[in-house]
Length: 391
Image (tube, rainbow, N blue to C red; front, top):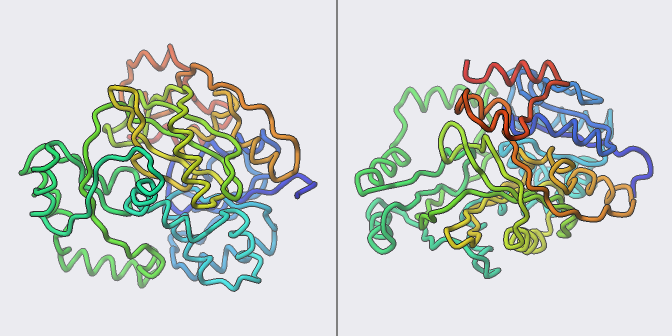
């Protein structure tokens, strides 16, 4: 149990805007916040931080990043660590496997994630699907496909449209909706086409120069799945957990997204969904995870929640817990400090327009005035960085 103000370190490797608002919510919950990321990251723009540890510009050598992280832990020992993006999840899980159990960073990762090895399972679409099936959760009919013909055979059995998914990926980059045979063939060929020699050369050069993580730090699972398309509304559930026990939970529906339906939500509607919460709790308990964990669902026309995938890191609604009815950040703070857990409230009927995505989707959107427009007016540098998106 931590008796003083707990220190939490957010580690980012990719410029993802979805995490940039979380430091303010963590400070409001009572945490001392440290940030480790590149200086051009959106996360680096927030003023709601107590310490900033910039990575060496352009350097993504796994060994260098690991040594820097060890130095941060020695200089400013954090009590808890949070990955800011999917690449950080993979890197930190791999890092734990390369450390001796007695090292301070290894202990921190174990404390912060519960089961660091489970991070890779939770972030893997295929392994999440397998675990969800074993747990008797509602999931779309899915199969592993190893060829174009197997993908088309799945479509013949299940109908169009259907989804092709790669086991690892983020921001919708490794998921494709195939509306007909021609589209399915095109997606398959694009995904499995051997890169041109120039692409291979540039990838090799970037790896050698340390501009990208080498393959030994990245997942090797290349499974491709064909999955039933569920007609309905995208939805999400975010929990904070400790050693498999859920501390706080938020559920919301995606009302609008930008720049396409598979992209991040630009408008969300907070509303309680018991089925999503039960599914999330069952998987968290199985994986024995700690930290912020997000889940994507599809709510069908009958109101049933179909689990789509897991994101074992914060998602863009994480900082809105206090406003939406369940402060997931404060719930984690109470767990770490041994304070009584606050009573769980019912999520408010809250509609939120994310800045700047909804104004990019539609500058005349009625949600910009009728919903809560989540503009970081009290964080000017971050606001300026976000305002430059799309320009």
